[in-house]
Amino acid sequence: QKKYLDLTLCKRLNKRYSNILKDIFTNLDTSKDIFHLLSKNFKLNFKIQDLNKFKKFKTIVIIGMGGSILGSEAMYYFLKNKIKKDFIFFNNIDEDELKRLKSSLDLKKVLFIVVSKSGSTIETLSNFFSFNMTKKKSKNIIIISEKLNNPLYLISQKMKLHYIEHRNYIGGRFSVLSEVGLVPAYLMGINVKKFRQNILNHFKTNNKKFLKESSIKLASLLKGNKIKNLVFFNYAPRLEKFLYWNQQLIAESLGKKGKGFLPI
Image 1 (cartoon, one colour):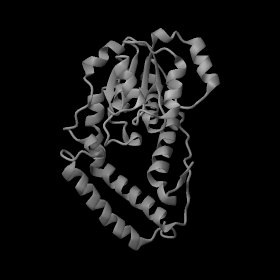
Image 2 (cartoon, rainbow, N blue to C red):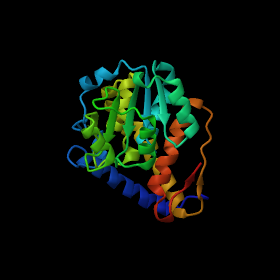
Image 3 (cartoon, rainbow, N blue to C red):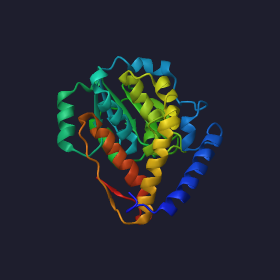
């Protein structure tokens, strides 16, 4: 490892990491930023009882792109053997798959969850409209977007559809612990309260040390500018979707201004 890691740089990164982690936990309960998601004071923009009317659906189609869908897809495939419902993730413009779904499903018996932070993602809107099943007061549609002057929000208000707000300070790719990931998770049968409560345990003891060391090593490799690619080898099929999500998180978070790894 010494061949690739600058030890002086690692020491600086170690101090920087410790300061960042301290700031996160100091402001966790008060600051309205992405880390507030981890706080016990974070309030979801939906009530569990309001989702109970959707539990009757055995088939659920989630329409979105990138972070709006990859997190919940990762959860589903990781826990698929325990989930008794069929979840279909529609995250590309595939005309053949669209036709197949429309011909094979009774759309009246399918719950559609449409997710876009901006509410104007072209691919998401295109797929949503292509199903052509939106009617006033439809009982099988949930819209998740920012409460702004955007197509999805305006449609939800005009057609009186079930709407859940996507907070503006939560980036799409980090939204798995917000409504974006937890609405699908609840309908999968996951105890979302316990799921959220357990998250902070992974910042403690050995997990915290492992996370810190791994982050510093990756940051050192990145800043050393000698290694450009990050290749994931997967031998567990249920982790495949998790790694696609991981790929997107790394590429979009670190790939700005010509920096970052190419995750494959």
